[in-house]
Length: 167
Image 1: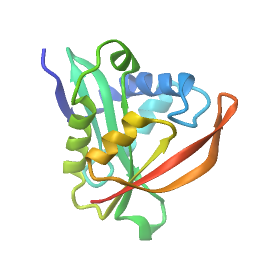
Image 2: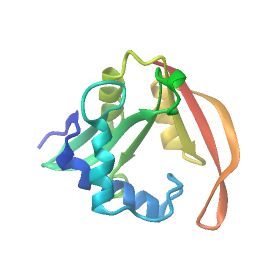
Image 3: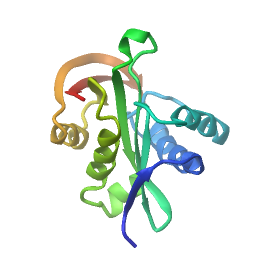
């Protein structure tokens, strides 16, 4: 069955949570320290109700969500309304066992098409992460800063690349 990229729906919240919780428990890609409950993920998803610059897209294969990308407010202060922060995650099992070329590209492309009226888009990437840096470069992001040892997880301090692109 072919890969489908589509706007996420509330029924996708638990699958999104399962993918993200893996990254919480096993990587430094996010600085969350403990996995979230199903209730958390259902509540988290409500922020994507309606149209506008805060969107969530998924990749689905054989009826199962295998990746997602989303945009959220960069900051809650009104002067930042035309700026978003984006993130993308792919099911780790797929990355390890059977990579799907173009999977991340497809999800991000759908997201960026949906938020094309935004002025600035940012992504924060825990380092090292060559694959994520390369994906962001593909979408014309440029690294504008490195936040030195900003996070601490799994017994070590982690740098974060701040990537930026025009909307």
